[in-house]
Amino acid sequence: MKKAGSLPIKVALYGMDSRSHKTMELYLKGPCRGVAMAVDETQAEIDIIDADFATAGEILAQRREQTPERPIVLLSLQPLRVENTHFVQKPVNAEQLTSVLQKLKAEITALKQPRPEQQVQASPAETSGQDSVVGDGAASAKPVATAASGDQPKKAKKRVVFEDNEGGYAAFLGTLSNIDFNNPEQLRNASFDPRVYFLGFVLSAYKVACHENRALQLNSIWKPLLIFPKTRQIWLDADDKQLRAFAGVEQTKSFASNIKLVAIDAETAKQGKAVDKFQDMDVFVWKLTIWTSKGRYPVGLELDQPVYLKQWPNFTRLLLTPDALRLAALLLQEPRAPLDLIKVLNVKPQYVFALISACQSLGILAKSQRRVDQIVVPEPPKQQSKKKGLLSRILQKLLAD
Amino acid sequence: MSHYKIIFTGPVGAGKTTAINSISDIPTVKTDAAASDMTKNRKASTTVAMDYGVMNLDGGEKVHLYGTPGQERFDFMWDILTTGGIGLILLLDNTRADPFQDMRFFLDAFDKFIRSTAVTIGVTQMDLSNTPTIADYHIQLEKMSIKPPVFAVDAREHNDVSLLVQSLLYSLDPGLQGE
Image (cartoon, rainbow over all chains, first blue to last red; front, side, top):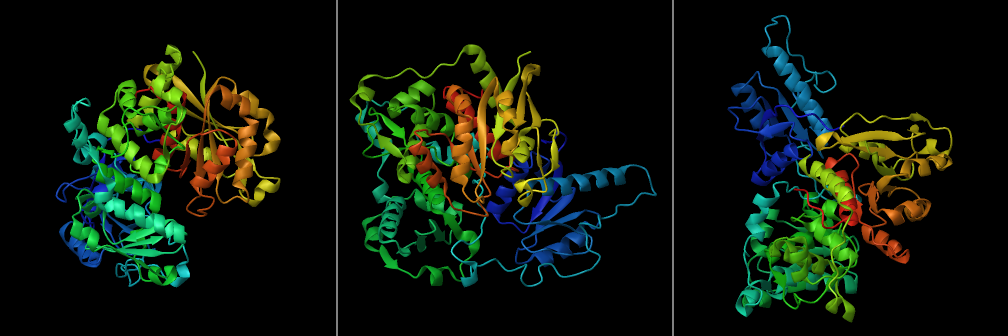
């Protein structure tokens, strides 16, 4: 059951880079339904430490010294037993984390009440009676793929958390505004050619890898990208922030001349690779396209020609752009011209173009060949107003939660 | 007051109870009992009548969330539960021997209801078994000439279940706006 609203618990996050920190902030806000909020260490009620971080042991010692009364939650891939700490195993489960935080909050509240006989007792189920070093070897090491791990290194397959849509998207979908689609110059600026971006090289390489049914490595002046067509995975030693920055850079001829595609042995190539750098190919291509598109449409797409979706994108695992579900639903029902979509659903052009670009990269966008679709523009389906009102209220409720 | 319903269905262990729990505003009312037939190989207890949850909307309206019993011998309940329903959420367990057969069975069983409303499919346990893929499901569905949303879901995740329901609503009316 969803949790009733109450004041969020103030937590400080340690041992996380800026991306992990942001992800955890959003995780607390989204999947954990706002049970806690990340704050500065001076305001926190609870400390959360990523025990798999290289210097987690030092951080723990420091926190104990500076705020000995403050409860500490350790997150780790490996089960840990550290005295006077509370443990949550990764991948972090929202319910488990919420439960631990709420329990600690209740203990803190009880402690603040004037009942001197009551003392904070760590839960025997969650707190070890033994002292030990954080991350005893294996725990502190980043997980890597081994030959024994097979074709599918386990990894989190959750959708990229991106809850603050408008603010977040503005960074990469906000380049277009009030375009006059009758103005050829403005229209040209609203398009992009995937072939002159990293995206184009990735799509070509993936096509070749699938066609030849063998793993390939795409070498460039940037980081090498490993493509595993059998498992539909890629491996890239770059975080999303780096990828997003690189995706938007138009590549020069010298970049293209330095591109090399080499065959690799999939099993050998996977050995020793950090497991968290493996990504589902569709998830990778989807976000790479959105970050390349920046709200522009791919060249070759005619804005007044109807297109449709062959299938729904797997939205629970993809970077979700604003209005994506509505746009997909309409394009699944009938072919629509991109310009028509903007008008019918009254959405920003960049939201339409980003979705269409990503769907095209995944190969699920098709141009309608039917002449009738170019002549007759169907009215959007209309529900009876009473039912429409109900559906809107349900939607509003889901979006608010 | 009108009785609005969203129906969750699917085979035993697909996550219907958990999914309802993820978006319900009340603790899910369960009617679990010890499994007595072949179900016991998958779950110690299973839903024998229905699961029930509620979404409270602004203005005091409620949307009732019903989970059908997974065992086929309780299929007499299905017609009763779907009457007046807004749409169907079909959850499929990717670790089952033949999830396509499950999908065909449930789509066929609820065919009349789906034709008058809409269906969205959530595939669970994909972290344990990554095949068939979501693309494979779409290939099967194409043979059945339908194009419902098919998402990989973790029934414990509010966001996943929420997106499933949202896609159901948009399938019914893409013009909807969440204000």
